[in-house]
Length: 151
Length: 151
Image 1 (tube, each protein chain N blue to C red):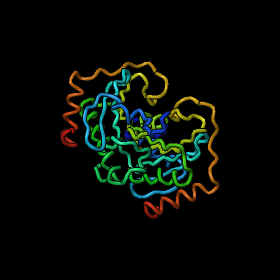
Image 2 (image 1 turned 30 degrees about the vertical axis):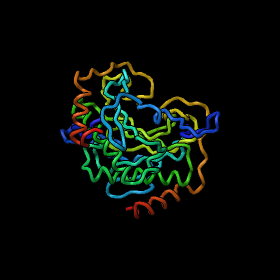
Image 3 (image 1 turned 120 degrees about the horizontal axis):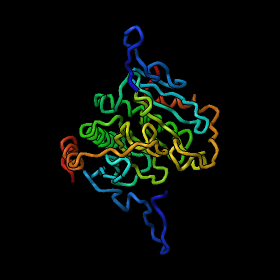
Image 4 (image 1 turned 30 degrees about the horizontal axis):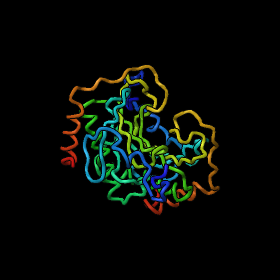
């Protein structure tokens, strides 16, 4: 997917879902990145960490931003581990469909609908993990503690 | 998968595929990590970056090693982009089956067998990319240039 296209009036316009939309409910954000609740019913703790501007690959970012962006990803991983004690964390930056840098941060449970498969593969028969009622509030608090106040 | 088990003599033994085996042909390595050719016939440029010791999650690593490990991952990404100009790079650390830190670094092509699906999902009908004949030699040279000599 290209981020830039020309509309019927010959104007250059953006065509990227993650440039146009938040991509989920924003839990924490700063100038570089936002953390969103993607509201996945099979994996309810699933967050995405999305770069605020349109960049295609990690190695298109200057090195200091690459480190800073990963720092947000790892803060989300740590917060999920603290709050949910998952069997495993899955991290992935694919972008074949939407080539705007975004990381999937997915807490996996041995009893979840697809374990031990990746979440993109067919179901194995488990059930979605039930989150603590205050999960999203506490996740935000954990992120503020590790990364600083949200914008 | 646990890395530690007790054998029939009551001795503590490791049980982890990536502790026991290289996990592919080693292209570059240092004390922290090794880069291997996983010899995937559908995605022939596919590398894994494997931590040399048994650690389960990125946030189990001290922060400086986390940064250093990702620096190897991004060096592989950059080398693949330089040598292959793929449509997209896919990065993933899952570990549901083998919970020993390893990153999949996968150059994806619009014509590959599964694009735009993740590589773990059913085929869409394309063909494996043909690599330049000297790809693995040049990849190693690129990594030596960006990361330093291999051990």
